[in-house]
Image 1 (tube, rainbow, N blue to C red):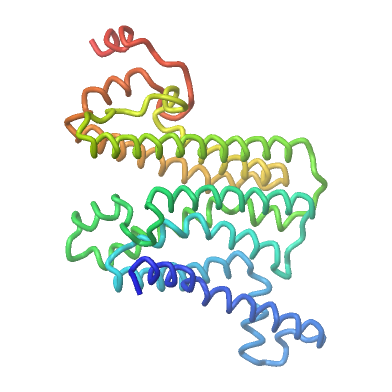
Image 2 (image 1 turned 135 degrees about the horizontal axis):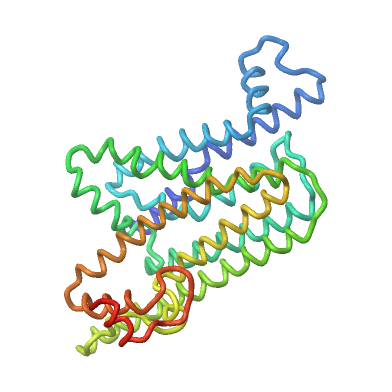
Amino acid sequence: MGSNLKNAIVALLAPLPSVVFYLTFLKQYEEMANAGGSGRGGSLAAAVWEWCFHHPLLLANLLFLFNVNVLFWVLSHLQNSHWMIDLYWTVIPVMLVHYYATHPLAQYNERRSKIVILLTWVWAIRLTHNYLRREKWQWGAREDWRFTDMRAQYGKNWWWISFFAVYVSQQMFLIGVCLPLYVVHSVDKPLSIWDFVAVLFTVAGITMAYFADTQLHDFVIQNEKLKEMGKPVVVNLESGLWHYSRHPNYFGEQLWWWGLVIFAWNLGEGWTFVGSLVNSLCLVYVTVLVEHRMLRRSYRAEAYKLYQRTTSVWFPWFKASSELAKEKTT
């Protein structure tokens, strides 16, 4: 059995503990409800199911803690790679939206729920496709370059630092940005014009990220072919959406998450913007890391500096002229 197939099987089986536990909870709670009982019998199991019923958000965090943080962390050391958390960034929001929609305490507008679930699936399929396409359809071929850099930076301490840097941090980000999915399935109000605005934001974000990532993929493939033919590569991608923004894929992702915030704000839970705000601030830091990495490559450093001076970072905008950029630098 090849490593690609082994990694695919591991990835598919990894979330089973959470899935089995949650399905068991639903079955047990339904039986308790049909019997007219609760946790009054004094059974430890009944008390556990009762707690799971009353604390859906805490339960989601506990399942994430044990199934992702702990299990994925252990698997990462067995495989010597933290590749799987990247793949599951695209899967966990889908699992969360169905979890929130099926929890016994859920109450929601059915049309809004269907819209949000459909949008989440479309977003996840797009991002999963982009991840596998970027990895040439190989499962676990490599981990994120940022984790590789941190592995070199922290050396022998990386084994325990990785638990917090890779997994606990992802829990805060993912649970945080998915808070609107919880709100959508906790508040039952009629649809309004703001739901339409939220749909526009999320669809625009998915669409923009798709075209930006596709243009980037085509650029990388083109350069690989040029290398094989012994020809000079194209230094920077400055066509399509990348003509107007240095990181249009990041901007599209932010439109998606802030679109979800509009759904929650419309339901009176605007505080959920905190998750997307933290995610946006983190992406600012990631943008700095990516651009520093680009500038460390000598063959493209000067061209990329000019690209920085003439092109907007995130928000798509018209290019500044090269002459004006030079004047500003001077």
